[in-house]
Length: 98
Image (cartoon, rainbow, N blue to C red):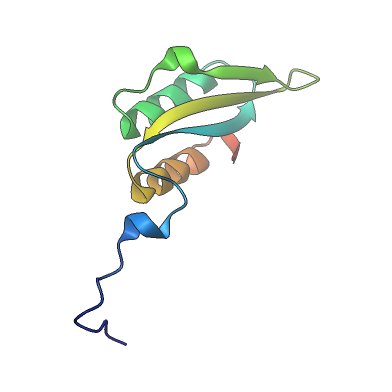
């Protein structure tokens, strides 16, 4: 199906509930081991060069075996967020990304 000439093409920014750019929190959970937080920071900086690590929130699991890391990135596009989620999810230290 083609778009009629008098109808504007779909704008991908309008297809999202997120207005870009915006601050976007992401919760990452993994084993509470050395290097986990550093790995999350490095991935965040790969997709948001201005990522401020001082904004990270940490929460230990009840038994202390797992760690929840909340990062807040500046989201500039759906593609950027999707790529960041894929990178985090595929990292061997990461168990869950929300």
